[in-house]
Amino acid sequence: MKDSAARHSDDAIISSDLLRQLAYNEKMAELGKISAGVVHELNAPLSVIISAAQMIMREEGVPDSVLEMISRINSEAQRLSHLTKGLLHFSSHDETVVDADLNLIVDFILNFLNYEAARRGVIVLKQLDYTLPVIRLDTNLLKQILLNIIMNALQAMENGGGKLLVETAAAGNDSVCFTITDNGPGIPAEAIDRIFDRYFTTKKPGEGTGLGLFVTKSLVENMGGNITVTSRSGGGTTFKVTLPTCDTER
Ligand SMILES: Nc1ncnc2c1ncn2[C@@H]1O[C@H](COP(=O)(O)OP(=O)(O)O)[C@@H](O)[C@H]1O
Ligand SMILES: [Mg+2]
Image (tube, rainbow, N blue to C red; front, top):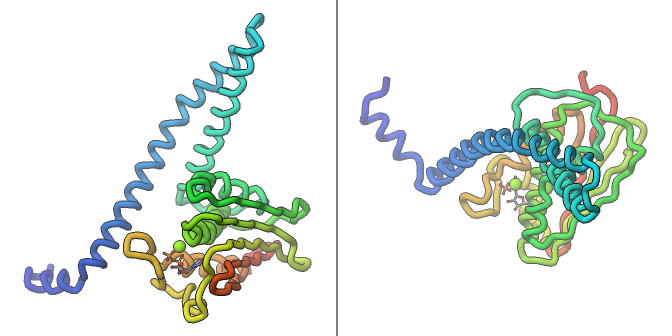
């Protein structure tokens, strides 16, 4: 065990900025875990709402105007239930390697980020190729890749007038790719070579850790894929991720 003088000098190494950053990250990690519990709690009341709505819809003699309202309650509750189940799955730490549909995963993340886009006034467009072959990978990791890139794009478009385009396509015979394009301010030439570096961030402490793209690139490369970026200062940014369709075990 260290004596108190040694501990004191270790403590002194941590600057107050770093301490704030660490405290914030820790708080968000705890909040994330608590939120997973809250989301789990939502499941039971949602099931009750859905089954009660469906029982009313099966009753005879219910006026059309009431039926219409009940059917809206049913479909909105189903939508929430779908979202909470997806969130619970996404928040789990388990490895879930499956044959996955890239388009469904894009849809899930866009649905999940609907509010984040709307509150920044960002219009989200998608152009998905529905003839894509399946890809075999851990879907939670792919969701995290999409989340990191899209959140960066949304954060770059805080000033209004934002547009985000998500495209999927086949890339040759044995790969699929997706691109995420924003019309934010772009990445200056002096920063573009550093954005995948660990801890590189242009955001204020508490807003960015500089780990998102470092983790994203590492995950993509672990899956046997690659990630590239093109950007012009003032001209928006495009991230392109290519992933192999065949089994990535090698
Ligand atoms: N779409 C984008 N538009 C402009 N800059 C971006 C975009 N995506 C990433 N960046 C730049 O790359 C940096 C690193 O991103 P990231 O690794 O996710 O860390 P963080 O988001 O915590 O800053 C960001 O701080 C930002 O300067
Ligand atoms: Mg980020």
